[in-house]
Amino acid sequence: MIPILHSKDVGRLLARKAARLSEAESVVRPILEDVRKRGDRALVEYARRFDGFTGKSVRVPLRALPPLAPEFRDAVRIAEANIRAYAERQMPREWTASFAPGLKLGQIVRPLETVGAYIPAGRFPLPSTLLMTVVPAQVAGVPNVCVACPRYVPEVFGTARLLGLKQVFQMGGAQAIAAFAFGTRTVPRADRIVGPGNIYVAAAKKLLAGEVGIDFIAGPTEILIIATDGDPRHLAADMLAQAEHDADAFALLLTPSRRLANAVARELGSLPNGAIVLVRSVAEAIDISNRFAPEHLSIPSAGLLPAIRHAGSIFIGPHSPEAAGDYVTGPNHVLPTNGAARLRGGLSVTDYLKVISTQQLTPAALRRLAPAITALARAEGLEAHARSVEVRVRGGR
Image (cartoon, rainbow, N blue to C red; front, side, top):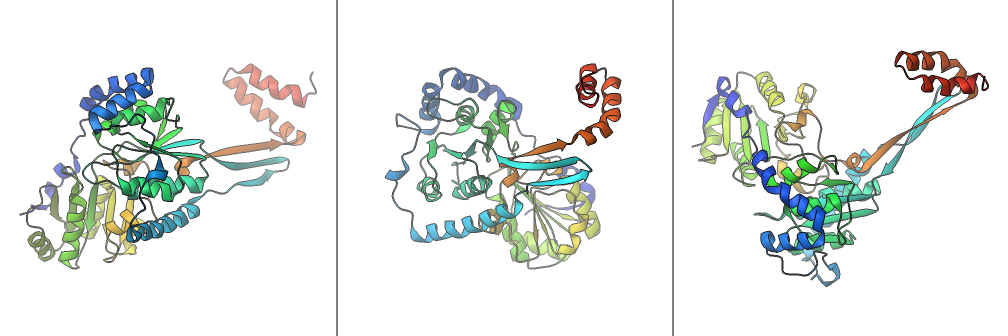
């Protein structure tokens, strides 16, 4: 039976299983260096060794793929439309405004040139992740969107073709991250790599952060549910849905109701990667949630939103299951895990953009600001900075 704990025992649950990144880093480090040095040769060798690849090139000829099943294609189109509409709403705007006489400031928005999207294909291939990583890039206007998937999955590659992609590669693991980071004769060098993966993918992204932009280093998936009442079958189903991802996935229910806790426990039976915690109040549940900073957070009503400080994505009310967000509602399902929701939200269109500031001063505005500029510059010992202003306002004297 799933354990029912008291809130005083919640400390050990908040200490997530430490990802064995240091061990994984020692495994992937020589792979990264090998791909950097030998490019395609090393990439194909690792694809054959780890993923059973049999071809000569990792590039996937999408025109040769069989058509997608009509029901699946229709589902993809629904998901694509909703993800695209949500990403379009997220787009930052360009603007220019006058902040003072003669001083115009603003921002322009430009897409990254090349993005690499990593699509897992382990126990459960994820064409939905292709949609979540590619569609926002298209909305952002990224001209070169590349996809890597470690094995042949018709639904993944077929979805790529449906989205009009040209750069699709059958490659996975640390070698795929290295190929995107360094570039090879076949694989373009990416400005940023996005998408989840196993611990070796996470370790590779961590080691190469700085060499290439990344979204975040993902750990095991997780959900935290706060409930005061409701259908125990629904709550149990949501916990089971999250737990089925892998053995390290985690599902946690916080409730002040002993009756509800017992009912959900009966529905679940045994759930090794989950727990139910009896809390004294909803306020205590929210405090625990904020300390945990869950990837997915389910709450009973929007009235609790003002108290929520940390979460990757929030699901409100009894008819908003996390599975809906995984596939078709529109917000991204590539989310921060392992407490990273304290630092950022999920993948969004802004991950594919640069917001560039603009500044324009008239001579009068520069003269007005010159005393402050030169005083700060000289306080920092940067005399040339000060003189670059004075040479303008003093007419070269």
